[in-house]
Length: 330
View 1 (cartoon, rainbow, N blue to C red):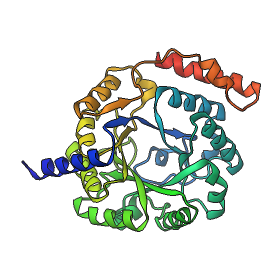
View 2 (cartoon, rainbow, N blue to C red):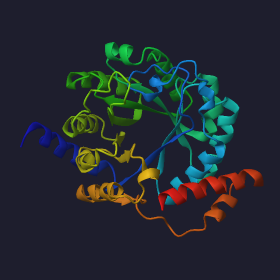
View 3 (tube, rainbow, N blue to C red):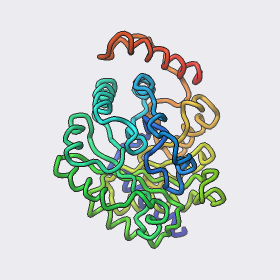
View 4 (tube, helix red, strand yellow):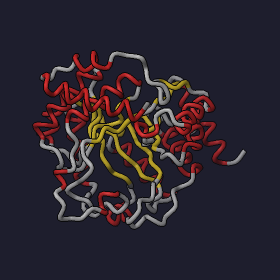
């Protein structure tokens, strides 16, 4: 048995002691497609022209409510509510968070960049915790790939979050230039900042970025990192990020200790062979899949919309948005 196999076996045993044998899909609920920074070199937003008005690239709240209803009824969890930094007004975000809470019946994770403590206090009634888009803990690489997104403000946010009784989470992108040697830094970072949830993505090379011609890390490399995190932090919530060309790594990453699956473009690929294969991969890892990626439930969607505490005009727009989603998915 090689080193990775032994590590995965250990991680799988730890996972089964601490969690049930279930897995699920987590949907990142994005409220915008742009950002005031736009220079993280791995991100497609860095390919957008700097003189564009980034505030125009935001979604309507009706679209967000429609997608939240889908998440609730199809058994998808909301990994986090997110969007480009400074792309949505604070007061409107509060309103949206309140409605999302009422739809899913629980608080959610928020990922909108470093948030000042006063603002965190305002969000506190609607969020369980905050996600810091750290991406890499290697300081040299971070300064190169995220020149306008320093880590220090996130560290302050993590501290403020804990003082307010909120949870801390982070994102990690593998393939930016780090190596296995950097795991010690990651381990220290998780401990110091009380990280309770981590999203582990493998770089997806985006056209026109500096990573366009780079290769994604192998499934074994992503599995190694996930297994190391699981064995070092038995209770941490680990979410694997996979793309539509990486379905074959799901079972391995689940066995390595991941709790859930994300990043798959589910509304475009619902019911597809790839979606079916994700559910099969979960079964292969001896996990029961909560929710569905393949079958639309027979429910009264209009009834779900009527439950919303919004005006009738807004409800009609939500209805149209939801109909568009369902038509595309069926």
